[in-house]
Structures are given as structure tokens and as C-alpha cells.
Image 1 (tube, helix red, strand yellow):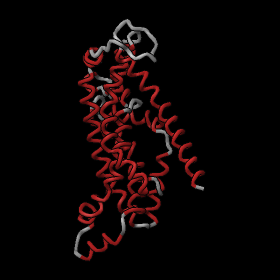
Image 2 (tube, helix red, strand yellow):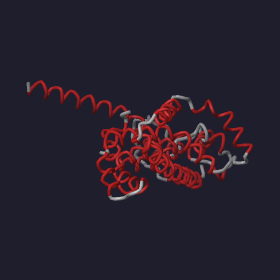
Image 3 (cartoon, helix red, strand yellow):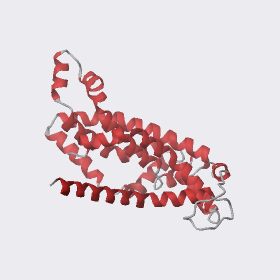
Image 4 (cartoon, helix red, strand yellow):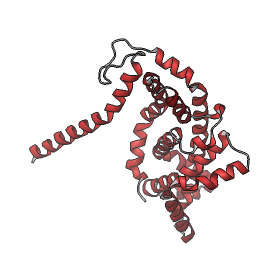
Length: 276
């Protein structure tokens, strides 16, 4: 019996390593491409002997990645803060008060999650033009908050229902704490794992948003990383080394964020984040 279990573990380990290596192949090709000097057209599988670190400096300057990075960071930060605050506050009563109205509202959020975001593009574009908010970071923040709010509420409400005991809140009520006091002093600190999950998912989604940014953020001073990279790619199709370097610079912030929060991310999912 022990031999069978050991064989299963070894097999699963081998399969996991194989899947991991398959996912690492594109990153390896990207890195080798970004580090090669201009004019080096050797195989993408061969790691360069002479590493051209200047590719990153040139890509940063030519694609104006400094401005794009600032715009993307501002939009991602404020959208994530609003999602965490508003999403957790909205999920709390939906998770604790199982009234018919709350169940109906929760069902609406679930229904919105299955609607493709691009179906709202035409009326949303017209609205943004009418209110004069084209080429503003504010419209990008509000759009991302609205797009990601249903999933945020779904994740928070599932975590609250399955993980946080009601006895803690009842004890606080006996001590005279208000509803907001209970939420911010007792419930919200316990939401750290699912908050990390929401933070990673939402930040990656917002950071990589292209479908809406290309329509609403067309001016050079408000372009995000994805929009800047798309135009940069068209201008440098014959110099993929710069394109690869720019792509690495664009992905680094989210990779670092995930490395810092991965423990909480996994804990949040395991603690009931995907339970309805």
C-alpha cells in the first residue's frame, strides 16, 4: 500500500514538473530574445554569449515606458483600493443576511460575471464621450472597478460565509460595537488571505487590460503599458530584441507582486474563496 502511494506521489511530481517546464518555455524564449544584441539572429533556444543589457534601456526610452508605467500603476492602485474596500463592504451583508433581496442581488452579480465585457463597449464609449472623460485615468479606474466588482463580491462573500465564525461578531455586538466597527475591527483583518487573492487577480487583470485601454486612453500622456507595447511592437517588428526587453519590463511588477503575496493567494483560495 505504501509502495502504491509512493508511486502516485512520484508520478504526480513528474507530471507537475513537466507542466511547469512547459509553461516556462515561453519565458525562456522571451529572455533569450531580450538579451541578444541587435543583429544576432541565432536560434531562440541558444542563450546569448554577449548579453545586451542596453536593450532594456533603449526599449524603456523608445517606448516611453516610464510614462506608461506611471499611468498603469496609478490606475491599478486606485482601482484595487476601491475594489477591496467597496467589494468587501458589499459582500459582508450579502454573506451574513440571507434575505430574499440579498439573494436576488447576489444572483445579479453572478449573472453579470458571465456577460462578456465587450458587449458594453459601444454604449460605454458613447457615455464616456458625452461626459467628456476620454483620455483620463479616472475613466480607466472606474471602468476596471465596475468590470471586476462582481467577481470581487463573489470571492469575498464566499470567504466570509465559509471561514469567519459568526460568534466573533455576536460577541462584539454584545460589547456594543456598531456594524461598521465590527466589520473594520474584526471581520476585515481576517480577510487578509482573500484580500491577497483579490489583489493579485484584480491587479493582473487591470495591469494587462488592453481591450478598453486602447479605446479610452489614446493620448500619449495617458497610455498604459499594454497600449504603449502594442504601438512599440508595430514600430519594431524587425527588432524583436527591443520588443522582448520591453515585454519583460512590463511584466516584472506583477511577477514581483505575486511572489510577495502567493502564500496568501493560495490560502485565500483554499479557505473558501471559490465556494458559493
